[in-house]
Image 1 (cartoon, one colour):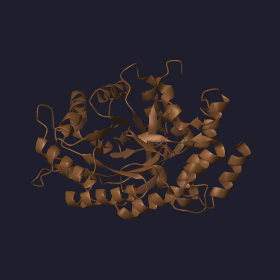
Image 2: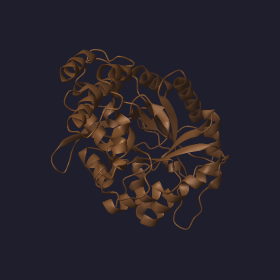
Image 3: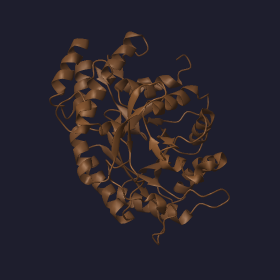
Image 4: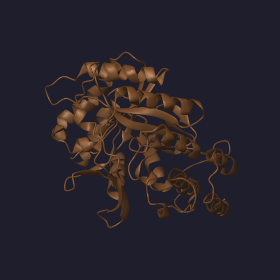
Amino acid sequence: MRAQLAADFERFGRELPRDWAAYVRDAYRIDLGARYLGVELPHPIGKASGQLSLKPEQLEADAAAGLAFVVLKTVIAEDEHGTRQMAAWATHETRMTVEHRRARDGRDGWTVTWKGRGWDRSLAEYCALVRAGREITNAGGPLCLPSAKYHLPPAGEPFAEAEYRHTTRALADAWGAAPLLLEFDFSPTLAGDSLADEREQVLRWIEEVPAQLRAAGVPLRLALKLMNARFDDAFQREMLRVGSASGADALVVFNRLWDPERRVACGGWDLSDRNLRVLASRGGERRIPLIATGNITTGRTLLDYASHGCESAELHTFFQLPLGEYPAAHGSRTQRALHALVFDPADGVIAGMLGLEQRGALFRRQGELRFIDVSARSDDPRQ
């Protein structure tokens, strides 16, 4: 299998097959099946909300590459009069800067910065994007689901219930089937805002947002995308604990770090190190399905997240590297990223799962290794 993997890595660097997950199952007896909000996926790799998921053409390219899911650019919620309590987050900026970021231990990683925040156009235009995404999904493409940021009040103030009600119902209408799948984005730029200065205030948001959304009266499966707050690891674990008990259906762990000197959100190895450290140190609180995010640039890092309970992973930065940074010489950035993440003979998902099998940490069932069993290991007290 190692020799076959090296040959496939070379061959697929010229052209990645459309249904490469099915090929992996046939050739290696590895089932990469994953989950997002209970939806079965052919593999665990998806695209996070951002500048790469705001046009139907981008979604069509992701379908051609064989992504499992795409989270659409984050819309800023509004009430029936068009009033947005979080209007400051609807900032237009499309230019992104891809740059190196050195970790504290000296490792060189990547980060992407841009000044924009959320969707800066109308809710009606966003709903049109949701409908376009549903058509792509229904045609056999990736699961395309909306992301939203709603009113997050200062301490002592009520939530803007009309905003939650109106936007959730509009998204449900555009989605067109029950239940609506929705990701609530506690964006990394929020961590740098004065709104997020108080710990109890942040915990209140995480605890109460699911109930506010469900009060809209539409069937809903909800993923809370938790930010990296400007506090210590203990507070990150508290966010995880509160989120697990909040009524959400899954947690996305965790969004980018906040750089107080540059006043930007950032990625790199410090981000994945912190995320994995926090996940590894959580106690015996109620377990909830997790979705990984944060500096996933190799299949082995993806498997590290999976070993702590993550059933799938959403990436952003790795889909934007300079073309020369990918081992494949052909294809879109998405195709080149998938080629590296899955087929790299040293650091890809296939190599990592074969390594787990060799060490006796993962076992075949009915002749197959299963990705979802890696995440299931986090619930086994013997692991």
